Structures are given as C-alpha cells and as structure tokens.
Image (tube, rainbow, N blue to C red):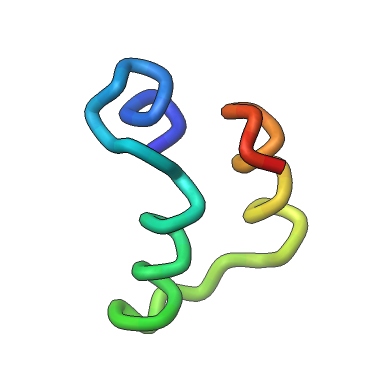
Length: 43
C-alpha cells in the first residue's frame, strides 16, 4: 500500500488503512500504522 500511495494509485494511505481496519476487520499495530503513514508523509 505504501508503494501504491507513492506511485499515485491511491490518493491517501490513511483512508485505506482505516478502511481495512474498520470494514475489513484487519488488525494492524499502532506502530506499523504510524510508520507506514510516516513513510508517505501523512503523519
């Protein structure tokens, strides 16, 4: 997903990760979540 954000395939990573956690019941640690957002400049 980081690659998708960096190449412009998705408009923002935060929205996608939030949707995965809420709708898809996907578990993601807070550390991984924050690190991913930092890598794409969304945190």
